[in-house]
Length: 105
Image (cartoon, rainbow, N blue to C red; front, side, top):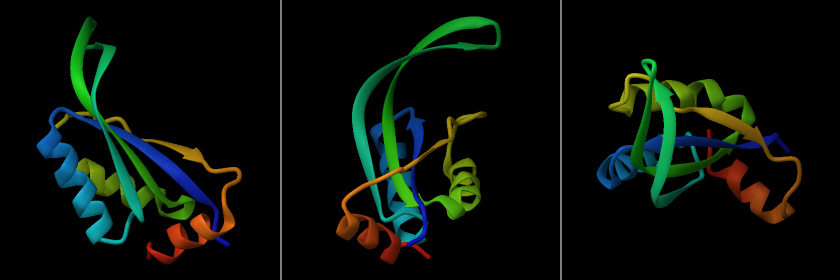
């Protein structure tokens, strides 16, 4: 079985989060994307402390597809520098992980 991962990014609106999620699944770059609504992010940007309401995307995909997922996020995203980090899935339900793998190219 191919190693699977979780990719995290945020979006500035529900519409943008849905657009990114749908594009990733339609392109078979992700098997599933969960959208967690209305989180508050506090961060440093251009030497200022900022705070924003965002939507968190939890993207399930193959680890070897991270570069393609990152490129798609950069293409689809409105942010100058969108968050895009990968967390490897060390273990999981075998049938679920097989389903994740089956639904990505």
